[in-house]
Length: 224
Length: 269
Length: 103
Image (cartoon, rainbow over all chains, first blue to last red):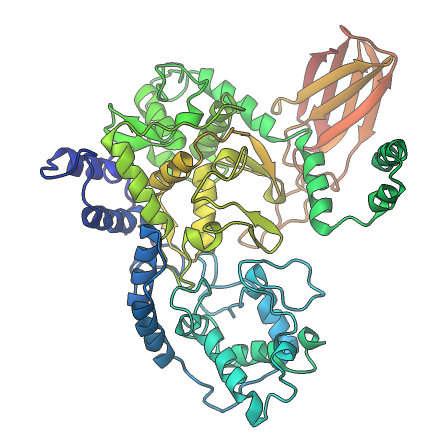
């Protein structure tokens, strides 16, 4: 994609749009919100260029969920419950459950995946294994003091939910919810800050199963 | 030394209990703060300031001219106070421009240096490195002053609205927007505190802290560089240097930070 | 001639506190660049300092000293108005000398 220089693109185009006639606007002399929204999308498209494995076309295309949540955030209010429910249902339908029926893998691998922030940036390679980025936002194993607070603490995740045997029928609801949440977080909270690890192809089924074990295996350090 | 002072104070006030608290273990964030304070003395940003001042005064480029006639918003050659009023609208380019893009304009019009040398350049090299040194020196001239970006021109107010929309724009494989990390109070990523940039985060924080020297990679980072790396970690494609979205975000953050005092140049992990 | 140093020298209680920020890459010779090639070693090997015309400090550095080194030391005797002169020499033979007045 052609790189836009300061003199050909940028806000000069927007300035021209303003100066070219804002008949019917309020005294603030600004375009309408709808016009501003359209200008912002154009500005975004022209301000970026492909680099490494990241392509403008893929990366900057909004789906219904993101479009609705972003608009609500700009307007400064939460998304209305009806739209949120509809979007959650759409995201729930998109969840891939484990094809081999195994919800839990190995928690030691899960810890490594949770620690790793690799993958999908313009510096990363397409074929490398991606990380889950989990510790950036969550406390998980308490031995790790370098944890973020953007998401809730996951310490004692399984223990707090009374999961003593992840294979038991009693644990199935929690197990399914946890898999679903990791696979597509927006299935349970339309405007969640959490990436959709499975749905967006960041993590494989095996990797998700390993993180599941980190959270739900009674032997995991998370549940000690 | 600190323990003695605290013990003396505690004894003077008869609060013996305070002494035990003083000897209590440091938390990890306290230890990191202490390390960061030690680094303040001898901030290598000083070296970039010195270089920037030299570049401002030196006759360079095909036109063999200095930058001493460059207008950064308060008239030709004025460098004090400009940083806390940028980005702003410039009539000669008919654009809202930030510090870095305005320096590139001046390097081009006054010195004949091709903007592509900066825009298509690499961090820490060539003319882009020169732009960083210049930005560091100019920004340092406003240290301690309060941000008050102008919003009198329609283009400036539009830029604010663009910046706000950009701030909440999700994208990339991880659906991240600026707001994912910088939209709430009191959050941190790993052990790095995150300022809430939807409002004034306080003196010397957020927009008021860049350009900054980053110890971890021994580099001087301007706001253009900071935004570039944010977008990289957000799994976005690369923003073009000085592009509209980077300037719009500067307007959004700068206007939100109205009244905050600039601490630039700062030192970061 | 390398890039300028920033020198601060303060007189206090009969001593002079000297603080120097040097501009230098200080490559250890152990780092690899993006293509996997070793970045060649290049560091300040010797630093000396004079108070007026008398040498009061010298040190030899190696690959353990990091980029843009910050050096601080106290000189006994010395008062405001004295001249501090600092020089370094690196592994490529480049040198730099800067001066400051004790405040």
